[in-house]
Image (cartoon, rainbow over all chains, first blue to last red; front, side):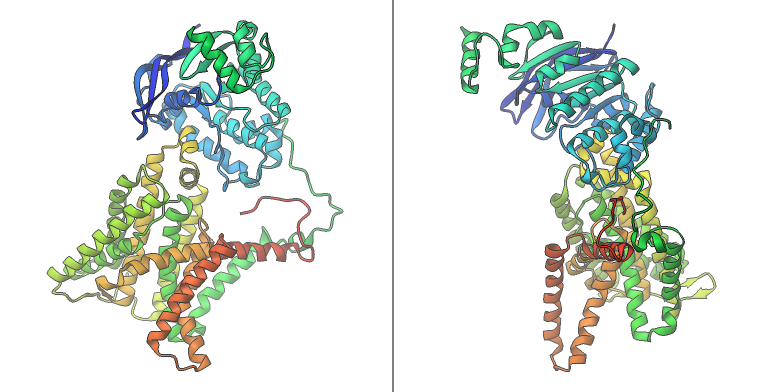
Length: 271
Length: 361
């Protein structure tokens, strides 16, 4: 199995002062679901922004590392160029266009996808807006409404649907679970698993919900302070004592406050 | 597609309001209203006095300029203070060209639009990485740069006097009366309005809206933010310059004083009062803001208060400001939204609201 996305020694600096990403390396195999998990501020979103071309900006620079997608370097490409190579990002927030209707949101994605198809060799399973409606019946019912009227879960569906229309080879989902009820979150994860199994869509899940992500991901990476601190197959990670204790909230140490956890972790790491 | 669930139908036993009964939303009734409106507008010259016909012509020119500005500021959310500059570029291009040689009127219009488009492209480049208010600053810089250049042209090339333009002709038809001008301007404004409506429904316009709303999300879908911003700047500036050229020909003279910052702000007022991002809004706003001073004049003359002209000008400025503040406070989406409410109310009558909510634009 070949690696579709390879990140090697990535280092990102904010405002010449903070090294937000300090040498992160991981890879996503073709056809796999991979989880990238960690707490707030661990560097998850920064990593994705580096991959999808939203970095560098005025204040944020990539100072080191290699980014390869499907065998070619994607360092320095702009967002729409990485999108044309087949990297689709479902953004954390601000994911749909409020003043356009649901159908117009998807039409926009189709028209953007048309230029995508011209650029890259693609295996598109989603050709038309109707394919997305078949996948997400709730969206079909609201096709002509302005997207501002959608609920949180429907916005997530619309954002994923729009990305699928771009014929992605790699779907990166940033915080699929953000602000969603546990039931809806499970539905979204289940849907991603289905897309993966039925169409072989490669998925990189970036989330704080460690249990949820590792339940469908084959392989997981745990980010902490801009470093990968654990990685391995999901079942091994889930069984790991530290992961259980710090990310799943169970284990030997019992209930702890956040401050205590931090202190404990520091002690464990440096002494 | 199989497996697609249809939107829930409204049960047919429910009373439906006048919308269904008279088909006010779509279909034949809408066409009737549309054609009726066009017929009324076309027959206006038969009814209006020369004075009001002149005002109608000014409104039509303002419609062209406001529709174009609304694409840039309302849809792509790039606030432009360079409206007067682009109008000036169009007007001076037309003036200088007609002074230099006898060039056919349509050709001059095209050249003016091209000049506006080129300058728009140049201004767009520093605006690429900027948003909302910062774009306002770059376009403000453009305004002062163009104002200075126009003053210099007028001082050096033209011996400080303005340019007088000849009476233009569309083929064999000379535009020598207000009525002829009205029909010419009406067709151009109608083309611009229809063009804008269609553009906003096309993938080009959708990309402008997307980039205006969330440029990050748009880029993640594969939309080139750079190209979208460049294209909206070029299209908008070209049409604004076209409006400037029309203004020059219609008034008959060009001079730099007309293209001051107040003009740019008046155009912003049009789209704010009319409705940001709505073509109908640009039209309604252009009508209201253009006619407002004249209507106030008439109102005060009718009251017979004997207010001096200089005081009246001050009152007009205050009314302008009050109108904009009032709209921002009470109906930020402008006249177009009020129109939509009225239409919805008429369509639902005698009920207060519809049983099932449906999207409408």
